[in-house]
Image (cartoon, rainbow, N blue to C red):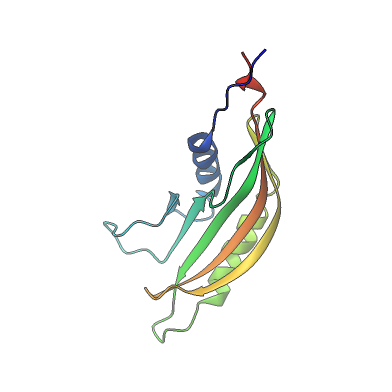
Length: 135
């Protein structure tokens, strides 16, 4: 039996984005859009921002869920809304499917993005099952 390295990035991103749809109506894989049809008050970006370490039967990496909330008119962060979205996101963990497990979420306060939003990041351990990669 030989191992053929396969990455399931699209599958992981799609599933996590689907899970986050009830946290925010605006969920994007990989990066924020440069423009949208309608103005958003909040949105979420789901990404795998670091090295994916292949261990043959599984892969290990970090899942990042970035929560963005539009600042108040005064430019001050809308902390109450950020907290609501953070709590709803953390309640999703652990995220477990046949393909992957995302566990141990941690918060990183990112701050203002310079475009009128404040961002908080949730980073979690991600283990991706690749046992079906053997032929």
